[in-house]
Length: 384
Image (cartoon, rainbow, N blue to C red; front, side, top):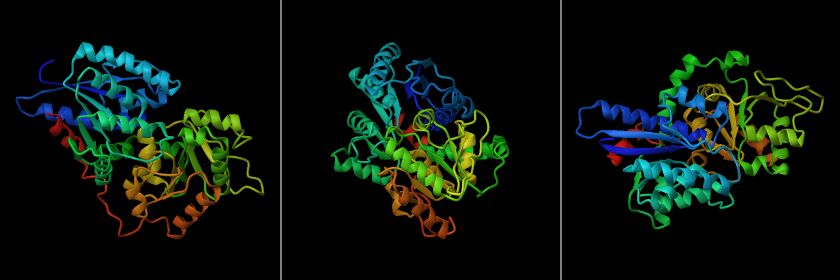
């Protein structure tokens, strides 16, 4: 390939979304009359192998089909990371890229930076500088290692820049904004035109809450998962809960939300006893466009996802974070987000507080926490 060769490594749902924005910026750059051409090849590690959570994203988000699919599948962290590392080494040795582009904080991120630096290939880390300061989270370890080894650290917020500075990392650090914001701006209109999830589920705007649960700290801890389930059953509002594969298995193991089981295609309302106000409406994983639609029309969002916290902010929806900490501290400081962990009472209280405020975010909140929607263009300028 002529020009600047870039290998983009993706493997999990949020990385698909971020990579889509940068791939579009690459294509736009190449349409201009410049002496430089950016040649991007996408390597899909196969970390997420569920059909609903990988292939459909490439189709919907206008990402070129991956040039390479490593097909590693799921597994323990060490085994999965090792498998990706071994296969990536071969790909990078053969392609000899000028840059390796990694995203976020997954095992694909960790394996990508390790494979590249051992071959003396510079790495650009999109979404650098995030910290939860909880090293029990595998994602936190992945972030720290990726940031230590990357050449370009592409931060989404001033807070991320400050986090790196506190660790003595200042060279190659740039606040480019959040590429997820680029993607939401691009895809929100597409979702309004193409998504029929509201009609399929027979939902009206602002008539339901939306929830997501997928982090191991919640799904792998029966007590935490049970506490979250108890809170959901005390909330007097329909809760739409797309079922991440990890969550589906754990809910089944714990016999939560019984007697009904998740429907393959449609929600199934629970039996309402005198002691229950409402139970979640369990549905299968949804596409990215459907998820945007559900977020845009929800009344309140409850989640342990980092990306969904930000999407709630962009759609001006109150967010209750089902974790003990968040990387997106600016959302908490702005009054848009309540971090409650898995405590039943705190979850219910946070929902009540937002309801008392009419589910409106503070009028004096900042509206530009994550850049101006042109983060991908800034990343391309730095890479070239």
